[in-house]
Amino acid sequence: MTRSEVEVLTGAIVECGSPLTLEELCRLCAVDSQRIVALAEEGILPGATGPAQHWRFGGAALRRARVALRLQRDLEVNLAGVALVLDLLDEIEELRRRR
Amino acid sequence: MEFKDYYGIMGVARDATEAEIKQAYRKLARKYHPDVSKAKDAEARFKEVGEAYEVLKNPEKRAAYDQLGSGHRAGENFRPPPDWGSGFEFSGGAEQGAYSDFFEALFGRAAGGGAPPGFGGRRGAAPGAPPGSRGEDHHARILLDLDATLDGGTRSIGLRVPHLDASGRLELRERTLAVKIPKGILPGQTIRLAGQGMQVHGGTAGDLYIEVEFAAHPLYRVDGRDLLLELPVAPWEAALGSSVQAPTPGGAIDLKIPAGSHAGTKLRVKGRGIPADPPGDLYVELQIALPPAADEKARAAYRAFAAAAPFDPRARLGG
Image 1 (cartoon, chains in turn red, green):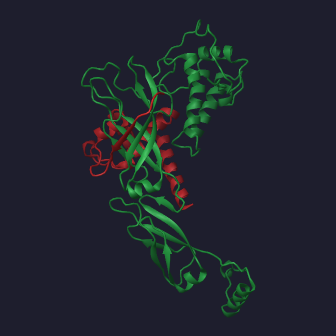
Image 2 (cartoon, one colour; image 1 turned 90 degrees about the vertical axis):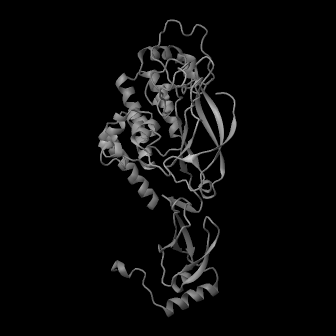
Image 3 (cartoon, one colour; image 1 turned 135 degrees about the vertical axis):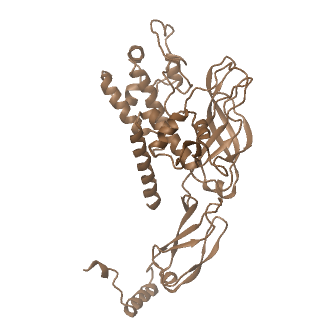
């Protein structure tokens, strides 16, 4: 924990314009493709339809993949459990929105 | 540094069995997991619980901690005894320096087993990595005010990032970045800052990815790219129709309230949501505000209205 630095940076929104391929999503999540394929086969990632080389992912898939991998790592939730948690989180979000 | 009461953090007795400790950890980890919990300090609590478990689940570390822990209270100033560290051997290599100073003083930086939870720890390019290798990508989540996406301003973002020092040791470094927020970014979207991840000597730096969430706004609620505004109107404005001023992110507008509107009527103002591509809409939900019957004149008006237009608000209750 040392010194501060200040820089002014301009970034781009990740999936804007071009959706992510399987390889890009793997890199963004820092896991090998087997882990992503497993999530896709569980139906967790929107955009994973058809053969794997045609998969195109948006921001929602990136977010879901990262949450899923964290849940697997931190809580040792299995794939079906992760899928269930993600669906329930979506539902809670929806209920909160409607209040 | 502060003494940490690992038993207190886990909510278990000092003589708790391994099974009890594991159970307590499981429960707390689920409760405070940052992806699941909405508690404000969830991330900090989750790390704290992870650190406590790291010590208490390991018989060697627990014994060492117990030997030293008796006679100390949580938060108390603490200094390891001079002969500390002899007679205990700790195994396992830490990946990130995300443990507390207290933990590191006792067990060293290399004592943690695996990445601490909640930190996104992952093996990156090792120090002294071969030339041409690529640094690890870093990830962070931030909470922005809604105005940042509406006007695309610059925001100062404080991050704690792991950094390899000259001797190749990992340390956490406080880093403040001024980031221009892309106008129209939506909750859950990610900003990529090229080359702002882990730096590697002789290699390419990784990227920094920042996932964006919005803090609650006093006027608008966010629903994807749409915004929702609750607008109070007087009963006559709703019943007779009127034109009222309504705030929108782009400035106040004259909003036409159709005659016969009621509480909960939703009006859509096209294109006045988050300025994404395509832009979201602003939904205005009407609330009927009741005028106070504060003086005799107002009370007389209420009575006259009741006499002129008989109305049973409970007709549908079948009473």
